[in-house]
Figure 1 (cartoon, one colour):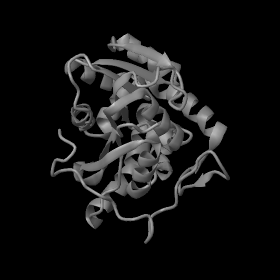
Figure 2 (cartoon, rainbow, N blue to C red; figure 1 turned 90 degrees about the vertical axis):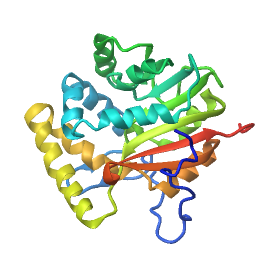
Figure 3 (cartoon, helix red, strand yellow; figure 1 turned 45 degrees about the horizontal axis):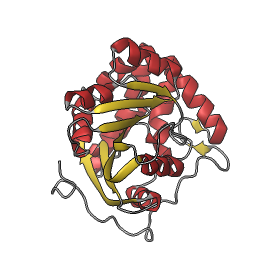
Figure 4 (tube, rainbow, N blue to C red; figure 1 turned 135 degrees about the vertical axis):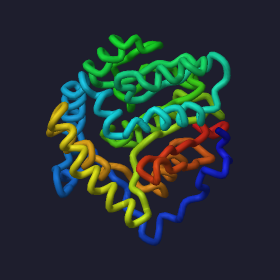
Length: 268
């Protein structure tokens, strides 16, 4: 999947004229959401780690139910966007139970997964996820500079305490010209689809969580979209971190997005 393909949106609108201000979860009071008060800073780090430890046993089942199975196609698209060569070395940030590691192995890449949740990493090991599994924070990676041929992140960006240092770390470990692929949720623009999406995300997802896993966690996960900056701001964060050629592809009528960028040559 080439970065310049027609399905990718190009230059985003400028930061002036209605763009949301940059989210800075590490500072200030908790974010307010209609259903959940969203924590910041160290409290967010603690909550996210504990939450994913709790939901790890049924995480894969809930993912398949909530996304209607589409998350597998989206993850294949994310790996394809990395433009990997044979035996490429790829780091998966917030690897969870290892779905993307399996997809990387399928295309002949050598993946390594990083996560803060011991239970998620344990589930990945029990599944036989290929590659090294490291308990570490994405903003302090135990990986040498310029040692990776790709970085991928599947639905974890909004769970990091702060996005900016994570992108800077990703740029540090990537070789020049390598690609980062960020898969995340999004909100449809079409009014009717957006209304159905809001209803599904705000009501059906928490209901599935309450019946099959952890009610509090699956109230938090839909609400956590408030942590995501809009595309114009995310583009600026990527460029500031040392990336270029930022593109976004919207998936599943806009319910998800795949943001891809290339490590700029010679940037530090």
